[in-house]
Every structure is written in C-alpha cells, then in structure tokens.
Length: 188
Ligand code: URA
Image 1: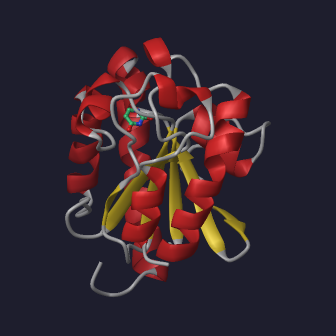
Image 2: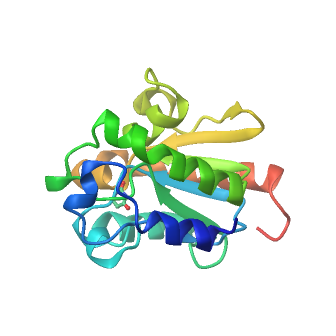
C-alpha cells in the first residue's frame, strides 16, 4: 500500500458524522518519506475549502516556525491531523470522531515511518501521548514510544490568541532541530 492509495481510500471515508458537513477530506501533505511528522487537531475553514492541512492563518505561522529551523512541507516534513474532516464551527473533535479517524493516522504512520512526531496542541498531544499529557508542563520534551520520539508544542492557533507563548514555541523548534541532528539523516 502506498500513501497515495491510502489517500484515495480516505477521500471516500464515511466512518463518522463529519463526512456530512465537510467540503474536502484533509488527508495530509508533505514528503512521504519524511523522518519528521507533525500532527494537528483537525481542519479549519481554509483547510476544509482547500483539502490541505494548515493553510489558514495558523498554518502560515506554522510555516514560519518550520522555515526558521530549515524544515518545510515541500522538502522534509509531513503534516497530518487527528481528524481528517472539519468539525463544524471548529469545535474540538468528539471522542468518537477521533476514534473513528485514528486508523487513517496509524496507517499514515506505518507508511511514512517517521523518527520524530511533533504534536501541535493538546488534542493531538493527548491522543498520541495519553489523556494526562499537559502541553504547558511538557512542551519541548521528547518521549520515546515504541522506537519513535514524540514531542508536543502549543498549537499555532493558540499562539495567535496568546502570543506570549511564541518564544517558548521557538525554543521547542530549536530543540526539535537539535534532536533531528542527533537522530535523522544527515541531509536534514
Ligand atoms: N488546525 C489544525 O489543527 N489543523 C489544521 O490542519 C489546521 C488548523
């Protein structure tokens, strides 16, 4: 199975109620062989319109952070979400929506085989690292799980509302860059 085949399957998904209100499935974007993968919460209005992750205002901010440490969705990272369809009014995904959607992310993960996963915000962090994970307490720290390193940082949309955390997120991206130097291919 290739990532493109999985994407085609996912585009027809009707595993939860979000399929009734979506414009587009937002499967993911980036390099299929990336060693670094970012996981957000779910599409917003711009993502739903374009079918691509993090293309609205928070996506522009994410791209700035990526560029600051020589990363980009065009060359060396992959970006996906916990849920692939927009929750109405940008509400948090319901537990049953996340549960229904997670097999898609697991399959993406098995095909891409990233060495490092960066969770953007609480919803992604708790889904990937457990329900007691606290982004304010544990952002920027790396946790090993079955041979993969996981780290979380604040969600870029939260930074737009609360810019005081921007320096902390910059620090997390610098820590990510250091970790990449240790564990990823030298071309990174
Ligand atoms: N917020 C997310 O969590 N994911 C996106 O793709 C866009 C905004």
